[in-house]
Length: 117
Image 1 (tube, rainbow, N blue to C red):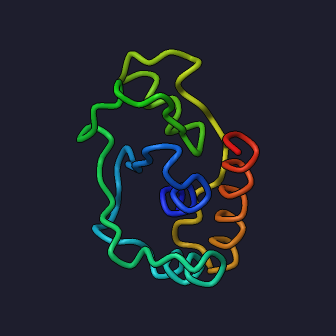
Image 2: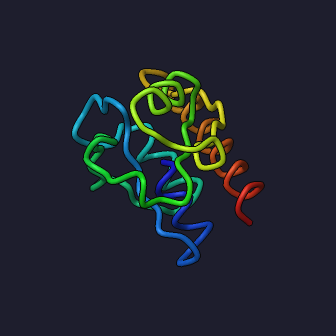
């Protein structure tokens, strides 16, 4: 959801990619697909989750962790400056209902808007 929202809000101002420390599935959750279509008119049904270790994170200006667990894992695994690694503390909606996904997407949108717009 974060990648889709960031691309829509930021347009071509930034190059945006998403990755996780241990993605669980090979596709976006149905709840996230519904929320993204309803709230933002974004189709993420073809999104392929991938692992952060498949990216060269040193080439990015910012690395944003959406929770403290991920933030700490990235901090331990990679040499990344405090200015570059950002923590937003947005709870993962995984295995919860569509309303929780909706609240998560709204928080992501708000953080992107506040931080980059």
